[in-house]
Image 1 (cartoon, helix red, strand yellow):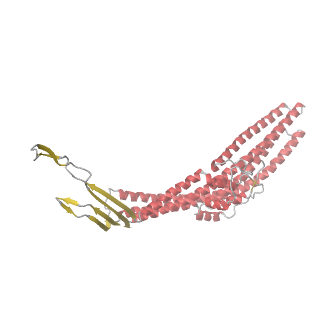
Image 2: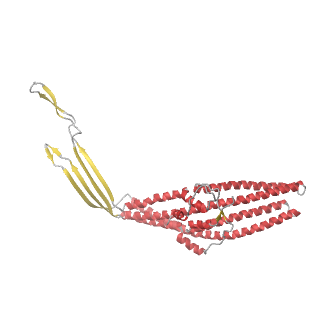
Image 3: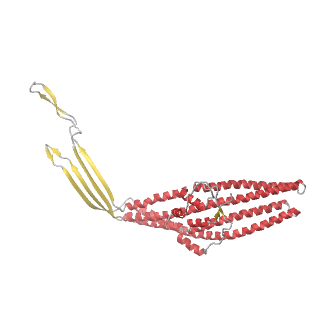
Amino acid sequence: MGSIAKFIGIVLVGSLSSTLSYGDDLITILQLALDNDPTLKQAQASYRANRENVIQSRSTLLPGLGLQAGTTRQTSGPTDSRYANITDPLTGNVVRTRIQDDHSYKPGLNNHNWGIGINQSVFNLTNWYNFQSARATDKAAAVQLAAQEQDLIMRVAAAYFDVLRALDLLDTNNQEEEAALRSLEQTQQREAVGLVAITDVYDSQAAFDLARNTTILQQDLLVSRYEALEAITGQPHPNVEVLREDFPIIEVDGSLNEWEREAEANSLQVAAAEYNLDASRKNLRARRAEHLPTIDMQGFWGHVVTAPIVSQGIQYSSGASDRTSLSLNLSIPIYSGGATRSRRRAAEYNVNAAQESLELTKRQLTQNIRNAHRRVNTDVLVIAQRQQSITSTQSALDATELGAEVGTRNIVEVLLAREALYRALRLYADARYQYVIDGLILKQVAGILTPQDIIDLNEWLQEGTP
């Protein structure tokens, strides 16, 4: 599987800067996330570290070369010097004279040698199946890394649209606060001339205070959404592009059965579980092969140089010689205290666990793809209904305000009608962003989410109002 990060690097054009004069779009932020997200970098480093297991297991099948060399120096002599009383023939005096020196490290014999050895496994099924198991595990890790890259796409999209969601909610709350303030001022003026009771002023004041409190909370939520996006990219994004109003809201393209087949063929979770099962089976074969004989070949070539040896006044010849050896070694395991059988049983249990994990993953995939498919189509219906609710609540508010002017409705009814309108606006905005996220989740569950989906989605973004 190709790297999503590499693909993004090809399709995105232009230099990126943390100080953009225009709003940051979704592609720009995704590229920054691919370069700076700690979670993805950690996953990539872990994958590379685990991939070394393939090289290590393959090394047991390849020849091993070794160079060895050595040098020795041998000396010998008495521990103590020897003395004798000798009469000087000239003077006749007895003189104590050393007739043999004690041991010295200066005179000695030097020998040295060097050689090259080779070891090659000729027959070892355990090492072979260990290598095959490591390769299957590496494939599973590669699929899991691709899933991490898809997860990054989802995290970026979710964080980005959480910011847009918070921006829309704050804008709606600001409008509601302004409307509540105008209503409070009008009510105060009407109460001053005796047209309404003081209780209407209290009701209007309470509505304004509640709207103001909601705005303060929404401002704090917006800041936290910006910070969540910054945590992924490592850079602030004070100006983001917003979703266009004409963004198409359509049902899922394709039937549920088609999406189920798509998920079965492309699900990264299922692929990883299948590779893990294959690795467990190869590991079981390796454990069973531990009962079989192994054959190794060993070869050696060496060069030895010896120093002359003098014994009893006779000097024995010295010189250089070459030595070679080639051997086949057979090893048959008989008993290891029960460890071999224990490792085989553990491998069998691991195969059973991997099989159950694969079955569970397939069942969860079926459930998740059905839920995701249904959720997108439900979002379409919800958005249409919430659009209608905006029209209905706006009409209700207009009629209630008109009734309040002629005295058939009171201020409480006006406040409730206004609250219903802005609640409908908030729910509509929330539904639009949820539709976008649910569409991406559907593709992620099916295993077909790619950066191209972000590129297509980015076409529906535009620079927001400063």
